[in-house]
Length: 346
Image (cartoon, rainbow, N blue to C red):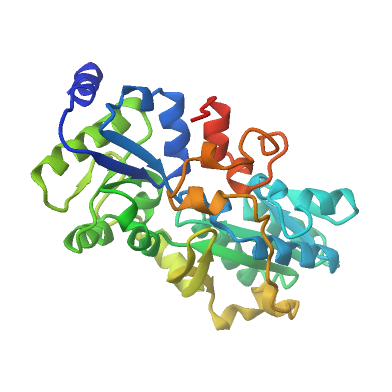
């Protein structure tokens, strides 16, 4: 089916109401950029979910990173984390005040620095879903092999399965993230369909996204739970076994806090005990840190699909992409940033 036929089929849908949650921040932004929302009839609603790893990372994690920076560690991070508010300040604030906080494109960059600066403790902020976790494990594998003892990870890695279960009542079907599923494979999503949770894996072009939405509409007409892979060029049933094996070698599931959603059992990943020397929390004997989020920010409600960003009283007023108050406005994958960038006020 060509793209014009897909558009016509979607525009002319007149059946029951369907709520579709996209759980990938890249999907959220591409849907806006491509104008997909403007094609949808009133009875098909898109809901932005918790598919932004920076957004779902709790305030306490930022406070932990700030603790390490103030203890003299050289902290390396992806750029999105720099402006995410902690309880009192951001990593950007800490850098302006003299802490060593650097932006890198890969954890291997942090490892390279550690090898050259053996007198410094180097910590990489390992944040992300299944797509980015393997790169942290590659850095750890290399650090172990090369005996780089001044390198460690501060982990906030998460897996999506438990979030799908936790958010199931928020939508009739998921637009599953293509990048994540390319790593994990489709088996777990097929099992979710057996539990009554429906969804379609989508790619990122206009045709791929429209194909996935059309597939959801057609499957919802049938009335039974379903799973379909509409991104077969990239996503295979077996996923990426090598990446999965690598992560399983170094990390183990733990209960993890998701901003706005709460603690989800076995939804996080932490280093196994045998790699404690690379665990920043253990290396620095870090105390338990409780973060304090801005009570006026409703990023948590946005992430669980309870409200659209424009319903937050801060949105577009005191909270903008230039001066973000919440993580959902900071990240390039955040729903608030997408709504703001594309001028959505309601």
